[in-house]
Amino acid sequence: MQRDTIVALATPAGVSAMAIVRISGPLSQSMFCHFISKDEFSPKTLYHCKYLSREGKLLDDVLVVFFPFAGSYTGEDAVEIYCHGNMLIVENILADLCARGCRFAEPGEFTKRAFLNGKLDLCQAEAVADVIHATNERAMQVAQNQLSGTLSDKINGVSKDLLNVLAGVEMEIDFSEDEISNGKAFTHDISQKVEAAIQELKTLVGSNKYHSVINNGISTVILGEPNAGKSSLFNFLWGEDRAIVSEIAGTTRDIISEKIVVGNNVLKICDTAGLRSNPLGEIEKTGIAKAITKASSADFFLIVVNINSNTLPVIPREIVDGLNDQNTLIVINKVDLPKNCAVEDFLPHLDRIEISIKNETNPRVLKTKILEVISRNKTLNNDIDIVVNARHVSILRRANACLEAVQSKLFQPLPIETIASDIRQSLEILGEITGTYDNEKMLDLIFSNFCVGK
Image (tube, rainbow, N blue to C red):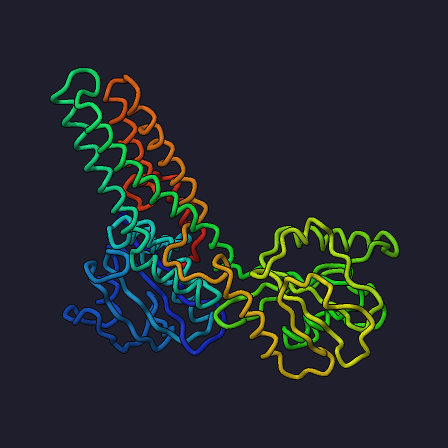
């Protein structure tokens, strides 16, 4: 257990009305008593006082509150100091606290102490960072669910079931010969229970495909021929002139991206170079190559068709093969101009909307149509409560490998101890998710990604 007292600024650095300095550790109570100049006080109560440095210099007029270990975030005695949000004041207070015996906290150290003191399990500790960094409502909801223990409960439930299986195997070891003795009944029962655990873990692994969509937004690519209105569409959705718009074809040479909100979804929308079979020079050729590469990993497509053009867009076959009515919207643009091409023949199986981006003033209708298409896509529009990250996926796959080994060994004439060993190993591996299995390097890596005051 930690014996030192840590301190950090818990609010963002910069000028603000108020800043919060957080202290945690054994010196917290004595410091608090010094601040308020009394030994008797009420925990979790704000006290107004003047913060005097060790030399007696007035640093600020502050509010302070003491949290005893049982009711604090870290599971240790803790103090919070509310001072004016001037960084000079904050730096003076932090320097004085260090002179009194504190040390600056490392990134994530407050949450790490909360984990080590049993206030949070590792899943919940990771969720603290997810809550802080959530950029949209869906990401926030998933993070809040994990903070409340949904993933922990799921892992603990699977672990409990496997412990029951292990208990049955251990009993068989105690009362049987060297090999599995109860025949088909025993084997079938164990196999069913292990298979149920395997499927639970596979379902969790599958939830990882939603992680990027929920946290980073739906990767959306605008495609079409040069001068079809792709950059105008980008600016229209974004709400300001972010991309250069010109009558000269091929103006866009590189990829420009921004995030927009459509309903409860965030679209990371990318404007790309116009696609044509005869690019004018190496720069445009490179831009087209980038557009095709970006499209190959996109979640959603907006394909702009110029109704006034004499030709229809030529979309590479490898992109067309991935287009469907759940991930693509055809935007028929420039409907204020004469129709010169058979737009009805262009990918007729896909949804479309006709629009004059130049003359439109409200993107609501277009966004509603985009939302309609997205709503059909379960990958992009889901109500899933649990979404695992890359660390969890690696652990879940390792645990499942052990359980699949159990399944294969159950039907072979092998000592039953080998099955028990595989089940124990899967339980140890699953413990890495919630933190019941301690791995110091793993913990250091996880908490190093937190901000200092958390």
